[in-house]
Image (cartoon, rainbow, N blue to C red):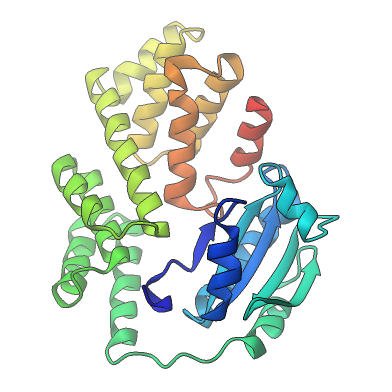
Length: 297
């Protein structure tokens, strides 16, 4: 697979570090972000790193290493504080820094290391189309968003972002079969595939809400029995189904804090699905990843 078809942002661990970082750095610059869920500055740096890497194009990628899960990698790279960033090119460590640098400084460090990639003909037009579709989706114009995503897929049928965007539209419209079909078309081992898995999880969440009678019925049941975890869970599912993500996350977190394995971990799985789907920079996500980590560990 050529570099421009590989995901730009991905997680690595000890099992695939050699291949995905050291070997892959022969084809493109690899930025390695050593972070942890409980680290506040990591949550500040992460979105800035992602934004700079995406803007610089496929000649650079961001590999994220959770130091809690991979202490041996942190030790190997002599990480003494986080966030710690190591920049690898052609198998060599060429630059590094510690702490949450501002975006301008990150770009100044990376830009000289990354070759400028020429845009393919029509690429800029496609990006504008996708951006417009995403904006319409955020504004709730499902039909308008679907039309633009369809236009992009007519010229580029394998565009992961367009497939994902259209799947999100179909989820809001309740067309679960279409969501499944679109998710199956998304390329494996990409950031979009992780989001597609989250969409499939949200199908289950929508169905829980439907089977429980909808949000009004679930809210009434929860109000009458605040200690009923099943009622709280169904209410949270309805909130998520309606796009009220902040309420869903708060309700699910309260369940995890009271009974972490309720419904075989369904509440924490719901939270994880929203983290993947929305991204850590989404206002509704906030500090919930850190709070969930504390509740679990």
